Image 1 (tube, chains in turn blue, cyan):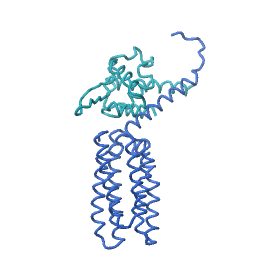
Image 2 (cartoon, rainbow over the protein chains, first blue to last red):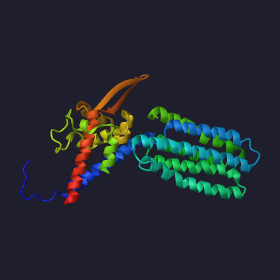
Image 3 (cartoon, chains in turn red, purple):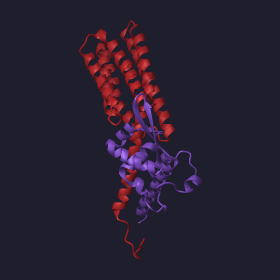
Image 4 (cartoon, each protein chain N blue to C red):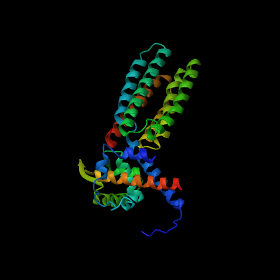
Length: 201
Length: 126
């Protein structure tokens, strides 16, 4: 290689390209590990929790007891998802809130906060029958936006949730528990199985 | 950023192993850019495989966003260099192609990251 006595500083383009390359590697790694951000079999476990909750909730005499069962189930599901994401992040040696974990957390949490607030409002107003539809719709919204970065079956699952939620808002209250079972139970189990089988983990 | 990436790229590999001989289509000197993985698509393939034990053809195609033809050509080049392993099996009647990163491939990615880091470092000093 010929070296000039007074070599000019490296053109910034080279430096920029190196940064760009590193960024590309980082993004590709994130996208590649998004396949199993929340493992499929974890979703199946969450689905089973929801089916158990449906069984118990349908047997409660009061709206308050019904709500308590579902809130408990939601907390258990969140803990399962959080634990699995943390395990996955540890295995990869990346912080929990970087990459796919952050995308999932940030896209799911706003609709969930809205859902929690509206639950209080609707419950106080005595509109408990509107709650299942609202929950399904908001959860679906979060899954659609969070899943945009993941494999295409994930946003598909979100759309199914939204459809069930929309149905829930315009059908008799008695359908509520069934729709919850079909959504939080059925959809999680079906799509969880597809993800586990097709994409592993 | 490069440090964290290297941490991901590296799994239980010692410095000694890293310094030991260079295999396959690797460059002869460490100051030379590894053309084999400098190419965007091939860099993508290596990066995606670095964070997964193995990926199927379909998953890989989705991750690096390319066509069937392009992916198989570039994956073949990496396979010939000994950077990736390719195994073909049958799931029922449908053929399933799975790719994984070899030790040489992991080393190549690490070297590449070192190289990019050095380029950026040199720029910062001036």
